[in-house]
Image (cartoon, rainbow, N blue to C red):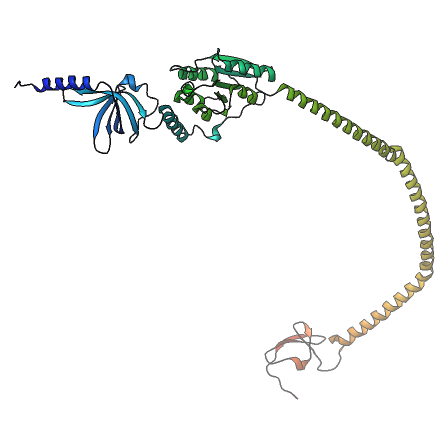
Length: 416
């Protein structure tokens, strides 16, 4: 029997295996996923009983529409290959599809969940669109029917708006970057509104509007963005991130532009209301003027002067009458006083003379110098005259005659 080296054996196994399994479809569950900096993806494909290593090289990995995640069940289109130095075999993956789920649909849901978690869809960050935009940008294909629909609606509704068109690819592998670049350029030019969109198509045709690079450009724009992609039943990621989602491109123009005919009707209504208000205010003003004229006549200076003159005349007459009456009474009072005054003075003088005489007698009767009785002295305590019986032992008192005053202390008190 011929003896083989390990390398020779591995080479024969490699040749046999790669020729026999040049195209295989394998279904399994993803595990141990490693995304290398080179762009290659390494992982293990397994089922309940076995596992096999797999690799997807950068060229094929760049075409994936969804993110490989641990535990995801997939269908792999590839071929078996042998790594000769270690004698290991693996699946070289050409394409990977989610089992039971379209790759694009899965990629859509994955990106939608990711952006929602980052706050891209929050209503609080949505910008308000101006009611009367002066300048708008349309980011779409210059050759598409969607552009003509939007221009037609704009021409019919509101010709005062200025429109700039940014011609971009709206499908294909370079479309997303073209759209994102146009969004960044137009956002820096001070437009009132930017509309990004295209007409209807399959999910593949609309996929550029599901790319993260477009979502980022919309999210970070400072200008209000309107997403108008496909038909009413079509939903793309840009619809959720944009400040306003329009069901169709033509509907977008109807939503952001005012209708000139409606504005004219509104102006007519305002004009009628203004005319009615002016008439009402004019009538009210005329009534006020008439009232003021009448009030002016009633409160004019001439009339007030005449009233004051009448009041002055009445006051003078009243004053003269009152003064005459009081003067007459005063004359009577003076005459009465003149007659009674001498008699009243004599009575007062006589009364006062009697009082003085009485007081003089009282003074003479109570003053010690008028007391001529031998052994008599007036007793006082604390400058007040008191009876001898009121003094008590130990009291200090004064005894005063008409010639001397003695201060003494009661030594003892005996009743007689």
